[in-house]
Length: 418
Image (tube, rainbow, N blue to C red; front, side):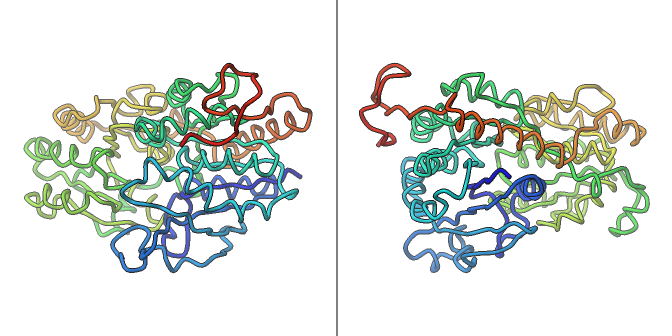
């Protein structure tokens, strides 16, 4: 059986049990196909316990080990310097986990890094320490935003071409990572899945009764409350929706750093805009079912699970034309696409969607994608391929140093860029 060590900072833990449900669901399905250990790292810096408002402060009490969905999960701490994070986090992350990584010597066949930087960067180094290949899985903003910053871009341009395979969740993301020097033949597209036991067409009226809602038109946003998720654009757009449809309601599910700014922006709408905060995964399908339309006005994306889940729930989507979203909203029956950072276009599309009746079963049928088992099976195939090629000696080569010349040249050093 294939033995996999996954390294990622985006995974649930005792302090943040709702974090990264897509990774938890895919890894749980993957663990049914292979032996999987997850190193779910925790950012740390001296005095982190005193800064309770920070992410590191919230995570100081996470245990060193947990079992999540039957997966053995460890939580090594990685040194994180907030003011220098983008420049230093990759090397510090790799150095912080080196001792923990070496416990897996001769115990794993492949290392899987989930998130490009710092996780994927560190996973490439960890795999080299263990003498096994590395596969790096990309999600969206790790390439669309973080990899645009000079420090992370230099680190990733050094690391990602040395991975045996790079997995992207959309074709657009695959195109983007190719600009970092990853050969096309090393890039695989593996889309995320949907839990069909949770996300499927449900009766709208019944869902609204369960949630204590009336029958007025309802748009729903589910996701992080960040400026780059377009939530402030949504607040601006809602003014034009409210002007056309005074009885329309907007439910916003999620939490994040833009929460206070968003609350101020929608305050004038009173109870016509509901800020619901983070909700358990089991409750999200109810909000999807209650919606007339689901919206995602992001500035950049990979293949967002909220769109997959909305379509599986039989709900039309109004979203921005970014990342892998156009691969999902392929026809008018499934929803509408608008330019990013364009509240006027977003408002017009939302008002039209709230006015337009449709058949949920048709949306679910036309928008159907595979479940998490299918997604995990495709990822497992990539991992098996990387491990098999390495064992056969056909694709895994010694990494080049950043200052060595052409590919194939014997490196002077295997140190990452400094």
